[in-house]
Image 1 (cartoon, rainbow, N blue to C red):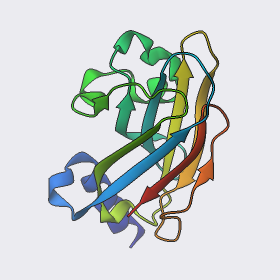
Image 2 (tube, one colour; image 1 turned 90 degrees about the vertical axis):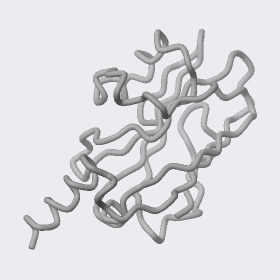
Image 3 (spheres, rainbow, N blue to C red; image 1 turned 180 degrees about the vertical axis):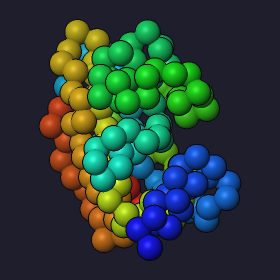
Length: 155
């Protein structure tokens, strides 16, 4: 049974079109910190904390992605990991709201959504948000440890 579940999860990550997917809305509210817009990497890790997939990157200048260090290490900064899932940086006190498709098999299976943040001339915050991807966690805001005031997701 465990092997079958592992195969289903691997298929969902590798070939998302073959798995049932649902829209998941990601919401990040930034603190009023002053300064330039924040770069954010929102990504998925497995139960062991190993990087699995980029969900969204806020900030279009890839030369700054190395400051999103936990995500950069996991993704290897390979363009295929963030092509098509990038947008503008997020300003002080502003919010980010994006919708991504995630396979149903990933929910309640030990996965986490993580957020790295960085601001030019400011502190880098690897994995400043870590939230389990669960049905009960949907809609519940968690506090960030850096530039993110609160983060939530809605299934």
